[in-house]
Image (cartoon, rainbow, N blue to C red; front, side, top):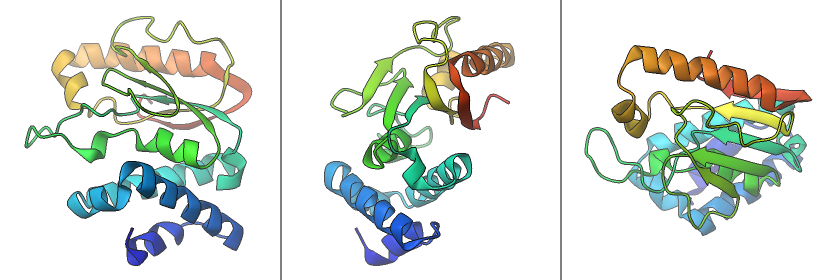
Length: 193
């Protein structure tokens, strides 16, 4: 991964310890998932990672605090997502948040309709537009929950084009997020608000 890009991402964290932790995590993402090459082809991926890093810092105070936390990633992204403009597969919708969590020592659980086979974290292929889709997950079983980019997902928009469907799914996800969080858990980010 290019040093300039690495420096840009690492500059978001405050302490030398945090910078070292993030450098190791990003190096792992580059080695396992060709992060540097994918950013070179799709520069918007840098902004997505910056957003995820910032969310984790705001939610947990430091990236080190993520270690050992069980975190639910609703609409995680997948290997099968395609760009709505080109129709080609895109790295922008890959499960980067869950990958980053894993590299930071967390225990991510990813949920998506697309293909997540081969990922090293727990994942489930589910239709988030189906009522009760998250009922299989135990109450108060997560230290953190994030839902992000579901309503912008090309697959979701195609399957659920109507506003009333979006409103119904938003309400269901909000209900489930409250149910799934531990009493001390944090809502990292929600597009369902």
